[in-house]
Amino acid sequence: MNILLIGAGGVGIGIATSVASQGANVSIYATGETAKSIKENGIRRTGLFTHYEIKDIPVYETYESIPKDTFDYIFIASKTTANENIAQNLNNHREILKSDTKIIIFQNGFGNDEPYLKYFLKNQVYCARVITGFTRPERYISEVTVYTEPILLGSLQNEDPSHLQEIADLITKSGIKCEVTDEVDKYLWAKMLYNCTLNPLGAILNKTYGELTENPYTLEIMNDIIDEIFEVIKSSPYTTFWDSSDDYKDIFYSKLVPDTYNHYSSTQQDIQKHIKTEIDSLTGKVIQLGEVNNINVSTNKIIYNMIKAIESTF
Image (cartoon, rainbow, N blue to C red; front, side, top):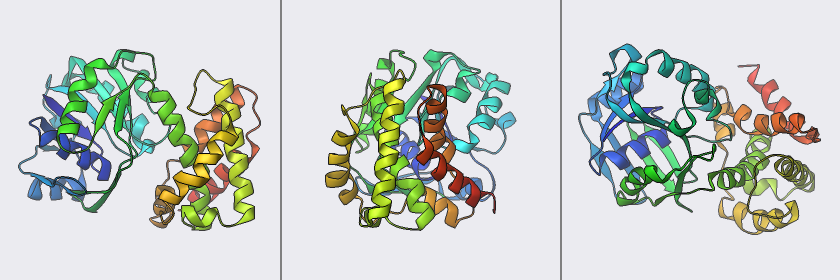
């Protein structure tokens, strides 16, 4: 099995090392210092679960240099802000794909398959729900820091995902449980509820997830965000696991936030580094669906605009 990884951050290197450790032939598209580091050191997975080190990983710094008619899977683990560019490049260099190559998107947010569906068929583009925590202490190392539930693979386009079982099996054999599901939309919306409520607000105020729950003003904002997202879900073709926003709030405040009390969001980390955030794939998607369905998403809009205002200073 030949796999090309695009997006050599913590998640990308972690997933790539996992499948390579079980015999998949992994290549990586990377540039600059990341490409140099992986060429010199290979890739490594540390932290929770079994540690793996894979040497002599092929690294390609241009799309033109990638071998033709080679890859069974393309793993996308970049920032969502790169999706339009990556989709266009894959379309412009279709010779690197086989006729039945599958694209699996390992990213935060919802609707990340849309840029790829402009160029590729529905039965070629799939999404993953990843809530395993990966960090990148070195450019070639992924450290598994948190594990709560399996990685899930599926389709947002009602395509049969069963052929992805071979990827799920490789990841599971490496020590991180991975499953195929027909309900990846429900799981992604569960993650959206969590991320959209905590990530931007925590970034704006520079607070941990737990600290946000200790202030009555931030509690009111979070409750409004959750209520609006539930109205958006109810008006859309999608579903999630809770019948009401109150049902979700019960588990959110009693279980989900306490389990990650001291965590700072990826949005906060991006802002600290003065790089563009993934807000468009998170709160931006909520606003987009809300406007299409005439749902009031005013609280989400304020939070979105505040993040965009911060980004505009970079």
